[in-house]
Length: 107
Image 1 (cartoon, rainbow, N blue to C red):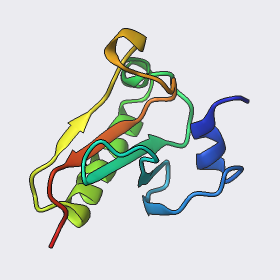
Image 2: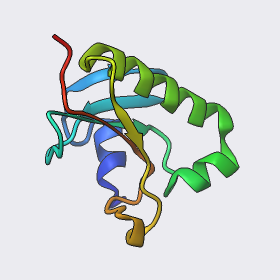
Image 3: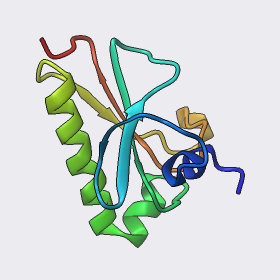
């Protein structure tokens, strides 16, 4: 499989996870756009959040809960949670992932 996030979640590409749940992982973005820029990725491949929502609401909820956890652990409480869906919306990796971004890290 050519999906970089599938390779990361399966351990083929070593990555330091900042958090992990049964079906999702969180790690730092390699090209951060803010002082805090984390990605939350389900271990199972779905191309975008629309496909995930249509097929596995429980996994979507798990991704959201893990995003909330890493935001609480890594930000000052103010953060943005973003899903890009489709190339024209800025999606560049077609494995659903949430961006947790913040201007201020947790003190």
